[in-house]
Image (tube, rainbow, N blue to C red):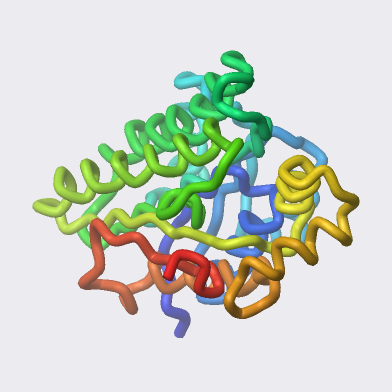
Length: 252
């Protein structure tokens, strides 16, 4: 028997590397997953990889309330319930000093990360039963900060506030809410962040970031997914309102 037999999860940003790695980890433990994201080809191929009986998908803009509500409804219609909510959609944003930071970019980054997580939680919460788990993907910079990333860092800190509010609100129903805080991950999203932040080519930028990580390497998506599985399962049954750092020691 798997740790998640009979459970159903919805994952936004489901077509990305962390989203898909998380989906694989959950399905391997018996869950069925609903992938929500903006790339139809990647969602379709991701669900096909996981298997028709184990996965479904829907194109979803997480900043659009009606689309998020429709995705939650579609997940429940397809699989009959909802037990695990993973708010994982994200964008990188601009790297610029605060005085030069583009206002429209700041608004967009907060819309995807903060409004997107809020909408997923808002529309999922009424359907969750005792024992359900909500996970919001924040970042190491949701625990720390760095120059020139006002949009991204502000959004990632704001997700912690959302999580703590929900954790207090949903605890009487036996529903757990936590944030996960990955450090640099070896994926295309992180490579874009590093190139933008340093102005270097991808390989050189990665070496710079490796030097900032006490474990001296980037994480693999599967390593983040194992921590997602921990938060989704009863292995973390007495954890709520927590910030779980999976960052190679960067926030220590």
